[in-house]
Length: 216
Image (cartoon, rainbow, N blue to C red; front, side, top):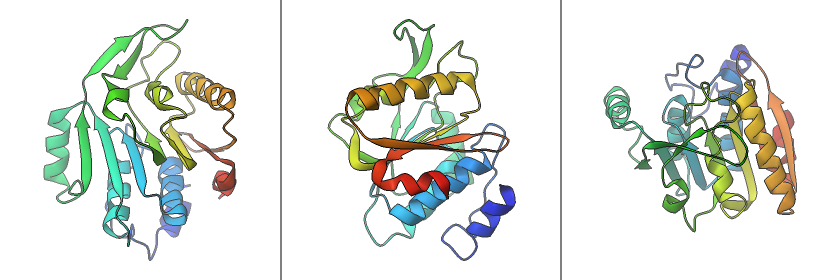
């Protein structure tokens, strides 16, 4: 997947962007499909959970787009934001950043789960064509993680939408995705899914009209 990603971005807006993928950052599968989504569907309203390498990719897209892009970012750590800004000048120039503390809540019959405080309140009335999920921290959760977007589904989705969830190789994310699929189904939202695999997996959940994104 690393070579595939490198070949794919040649001659594009991302070719000269420095990236450090893997480990705590998004992996090559997520970076690849994120890039392809941006390149192919040209989303105008983007929601990103977690500041990092995906932010560089989205920001490069925004800065090279012919249309005005709304890029909303949710992050909990002001120190990390400051460090990122100093290390990556101009990357966050056109990004709307919400700094939201973490809190631990009880979700249905699952164990406690870490979420962004007041997540849905910050995004009330907004709709997104692309949502990228790589936060909050989820690897230490007992059985489910990163449930935040469940609060804004389906109201927060445009008719054509893509949701990308990194770390889908982990059981906690798989459990959340099951909840997400159930919520979409119960809301009569037609969707398709696909998994891009590597050292870390990324799942794509998209409206049926964008089903080709599941097999690029």
